Image 1 (cartoon, rainbow, N blue to C red):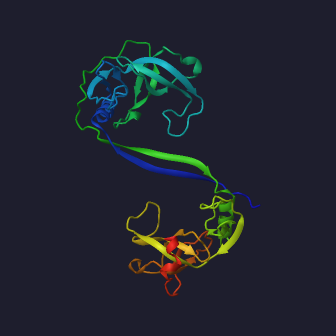
Image 2: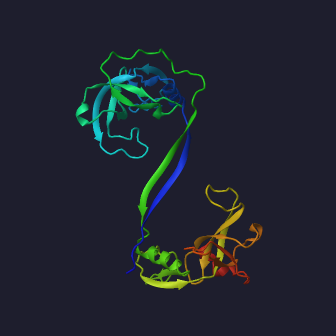
Image 3: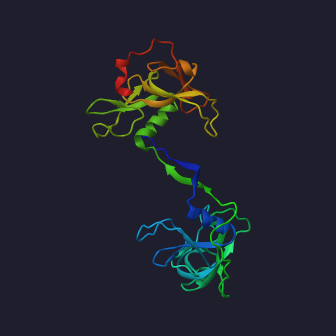
Length: 313
């Protein structure tokens, strides 16, 4: 059995979102070194503030300032910080009930070791030197044995309010395509397309999945298909993707390789985008050293009859 492939994979993108009036005031306050909470109808002060009462679901909007000092209510030691966490040296995750608040705020506490942190200890906010209106404006908490911080008297109204944030989203993981797709990928390196046939319905699936998606039966019989195929459907791409060196507009389509019962994805080239059509007969184009087709181009054959590929549209 061929070795099952695996490789590190990173999915990363900037997530942009708008802010509600409550969130806008909270983050703008952090930029101004002010911590705001929101008052509930029964008199509780929630920090960080939320738009709805978690108990009654009522709308909330009465903002109140709380102290930048507080008390640790619980904690856990982080001996190996990860990328993007508040500190790059070991630290404690703490829930801090700020003075004047009725709920805890989760953040990092900068202490030399787990023996230096305990429930009930007093701490204060360490503000970031450069602040932009984000939770990272609080660099971390630090031990503090002085008096409670004085309030500024802010009512949550500031100039140049923060109305949106951009948060980086990233997922690192190791991907393995499994036995069936490993065989498919290895065959592509030899410029062959290999699928697997279902022993029940006899359909050939490319790329193979290790099981028939219709019958649910395991598949193992390899079948070589293509290399030519039929364009079953397509779209014209008019927005250039970051880090993709392809000029727009270009065509991306579903291609049913000869002998396959499942259409795969591929870019269509060698033809003006406005002349691409369903039923177009295509063949793969490989680049030197490429492990998969760079794109598919017209073969010059007559277009396929719709009835021959309608089940794959």
